[in-house]
Length: 368
Ligand SMILES: Cc1ncc(COP(=O)(O)O)c(C=O)c1O
Image 1 (cartoon, rainbow, N blue to C red):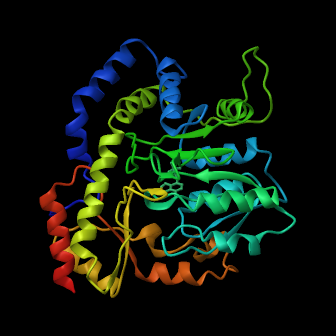
Image 2 (image 1 turned 90 degrees about the vertical axis):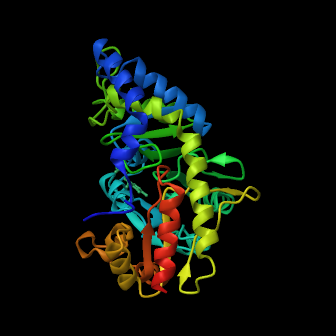
Image 3 (image 1 turned 60 degrees about the vertical axis):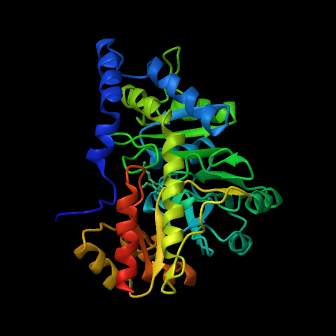
């Protein structure tokens, strides 16, 4: 396929950062720093500073970040954790692998967890809420944290898609007991492979996650309990540290592109767009994705593909409760289900040129 606008353009992205990345790889490898070394500690310190938490612990990916956070928080068999169905299956999988049961609630207009649905889902077994800050927009954490406090529930954030996004001045990941990030290549801060992190203000959480990620091995040679190998490679930490410095600029560009999409498309009645990037108000969105709802979605996707615009349908067009093999089909989530019939994501990455954004806008308008 001869794409005019790629959904993500990895080769273009690489060319822009090539020299710095290769320099870091060479320096790190020449020093023999391959596992749990200073580059990892530096990246963890810089990430914690960026998010505004006391600690960050690098791990293998966000799924493991969530799994280890849940275990470190003491959540396990017999417990329930409230989350959404409009998320990657990873969120529910982490809850399942910790031994607990995912309980799914519906979403609101902004495609994030509808905080108004949480209380009806609470049972005596509920131990935690796991909000998912989707598409670079933080959930309504003001109301969510009040519900959690009222019911004595822990909050562990799936912030895989929201590094740098804020609500009322606090960054995603810094609200709950722990926040979990993904450095999957397509993410705001993408590695050249898998990576993730847990951020927290709790020294105990940081210590437990650090132990759980490395076989439970204590400095004195003892082992604190059954654990896992979920380390973040030192080399990747070094590369991520280089990229972290550029993240604010990339976020700025994502917000510019979101503004251009909004300008160009908000008057098309067949489309429902995310809110534009605002400079005032509680939300600072970072537009990890540009997720829209569209009438005649499948025909639109075919048209865009034909015209060389690559799109993606979120999670393949199904929520977590719509995969029969996972045993969660008893959930009734009308807004989530309706959204999946209409949803698609159009190209959104900082390497898009203005001309490419304009082309996407014209192609979409041309269809309707
Ligand atoms: C909302 C959400 N949660 C969790 C994950 C899982 O992240 P990872 O692939 O790093 O395990 C992703 C990644 O795609 C995601 O988008």
